[in-house]
Image 1 (cartoon, rainbow, N blue to C red):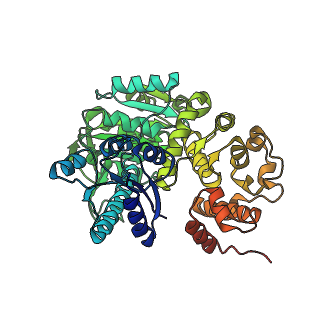
Image 2: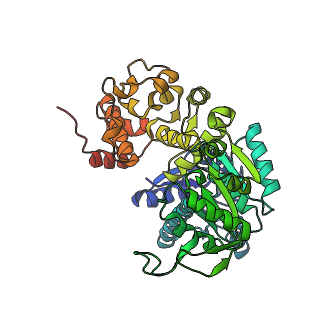
Image 3: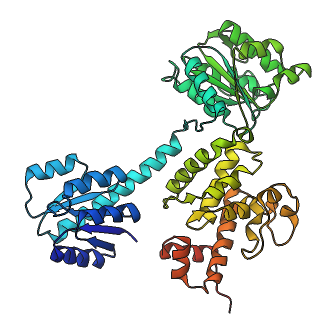
Length: 473
């Protein structure tokens, strides 16, 4: 339910506004001074504020300024019995959505409230969409290894030097490549990505260099390759250790001469491309095994940046976990949950074979399945995705046991990974079991359960209907 805060030192105005807004099904909180109003804004998840300008303890303009410093996107509607154009302009400059004179006109008030709430929703949705569209995230961490990577990026990015980024899957190689591009003079041109491991060897040359119409059976039209698409920009060759030897030879020629020839074509095309490559393999071992060309390795590895696995920089886990917690809560439009110190210690104890990617998924799982705060008990319970069905009353084994024991996958009433076709299926299943457990624990008292798991009652009813949950007789 939409929550509106009224701050006004006149009881009659507060009562009138409350009556009007509650009739429109808004949840209303009111107070007679700005100091208490700010305390409510800090504590409660308020959607809109109606604030008087002239008040005794704290002026409405001060409340507006301090509140927007806490929650910049919170819509404010200022109200005053001494309204002037100058006052309205000043309120707008300070960030107020609108200004209404006393006594408020009913229709204008409701329209203004509705528009302010819609604007707040649009601002939130825009931020979420921008996060989804913008792929370049910050490189987070205070460890020595991360600082060294950041320093190297600052030095190397402004040049055209080719860079080889090494590291395990999920460690953040792509992010390093993106920042090398973003901080380079080529940032205004495209960054073109090629996953060499995902393209069949017989198609990789066409993908990189393009082809002419009729050059092979399915070549029904001319195709522009990735090298041409990245002209004046950056070409990111991910998992280059999986590229075929024949494609490696052509990439080497393109790097040497800055020219390419489309498959089935005769004309040489000049390209101006900076190449950044990444791999999770030891290319020197691949060279010894005859799977990678030594001359190409030396061409690519002018600068080598190694991204260490998460187990080698566990000091960064709290920073990353809190960032992912804020991000996930923002995406799901829910209050940010606190991760306790004990939970952080439990997270550090995990093996993290999937590195940053695994940590992000883990935090998302904990946000969905935990109560108001993420505890060490939650980490132990949900560290293994199949362990969520273990009854809360049972003794939960230490993190190391869950993380390393095969019995966590097969023993007792735990789910089988193979049951889930996608991660969304798994999330739905865990959410259903969690809600079912909480409802049964609270004797199917929906209001109590909604308060305990910190969601709106209407939202809980929707979940019950979605999952087809029924109280057993």
